[in-house]
Length: 195
Image (cartoon, rainbow, N blue to C red):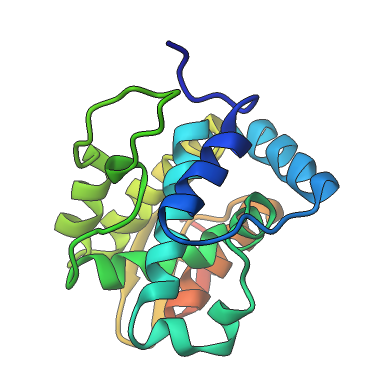
């Protein structure tokens, strides 16, 4: 019995989508590029399949599924990569009010042979959504080790319109952090720490 790898992820994704009554619509080059990007950023195949499960649940949501943004987002590896921050940002808002119906924890492809249990990550998302900074810190564990270290040094103060982050990360990380909070609807201000 093999486990889920990037070599067999497309066949597992196809099986997951068939179980959901969906077709796997993809471009081979874009999917290969997405796999390369997920790999280079240190994301595990299990995370990628779980991300696609979240995307399916968002698209099924009674309100979100009707939005043009989500209608235009295909359920494939390349769109999961392109919209991963948005997916991770939006999903906790629906995960607290609905029980998951789709995702890796509920998907048992023959190649994986794993029991279906709710992942610790999914439980953490639900239990920490009341603290957005902690939710962000949990989400940031998906990033590279150096990015996680940079984020761990930061502190934040939030209100209903903005987040003030004490810390000044490199530009690439600043873009990721800013996109995360902007997708939630908060403006982001960075403050250099006093030395």
